[in-house]
Image (cartoon, rainbow, N blue to C red; front, top):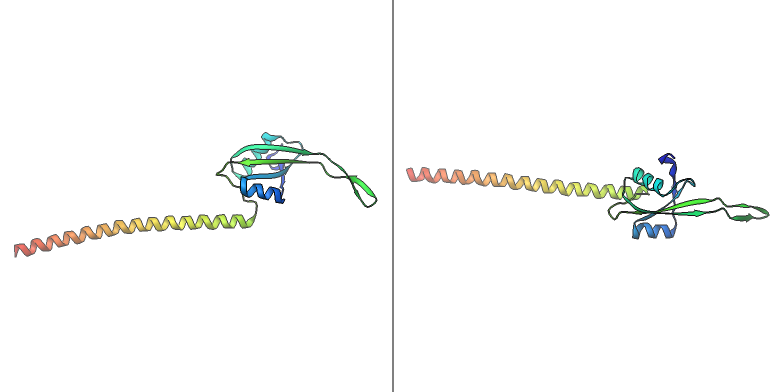
Length: 144
């Protein structure tokens, strides 16, 4: 099965949201023909994360009524994906924007540290030059 066809959509319920924020566990509705190995490969490939464990739940169709019409609900297969502690999936655009801002802030801090190190080196060079000039002036004064 094609990797792009394995995952259909994420499950966005209160329970899955709590698991996502607290335990780094994500829930997806997947194709009925897939298995745990395919789900793991698909999540790792698509989201570029490390998956530690995958649980699969099969929901069969159930009889349902709407007024006088009777029928069945759709059969669904859900995959509960456990990620490594360091990994994270950004499902919403707002999360992606926040993550991007954090990265930019870290880069700016790194640049400031690099600049401060460069300034320290420049200050040391200036001190050395000033000391050399002071020594030259002292030696000239002693000679006179």
